Length: 92
View 1: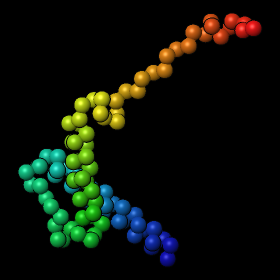
View 2: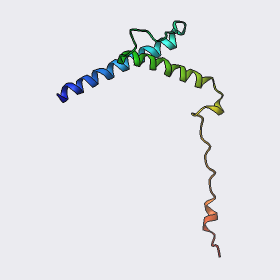
View 3: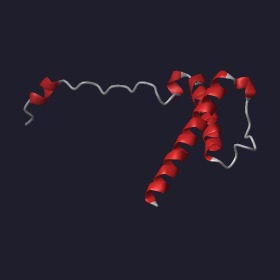
View 4: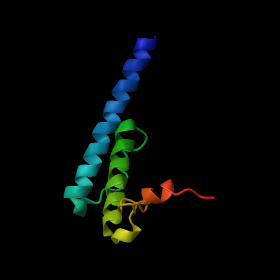
């Protein structure tokens, strides 16, 4: 029974990933299609992946449009180096 359940989960994950990749690629390379939720895709794993792939592309596209200082991926400022010679000074 457990083996069957595991195989079913693995199958569902592959279907979701396939749908996700399809949705992402279509949104990226064929934006004019602008596929809205299709009746046949609603309520199944592959359809959910398809819609999530489209959403992910839209998120990434919107993030790229932001100026660098508003993006989360900007480089972090490094903390200033502490002069190590000052640590050796005896403080009385």
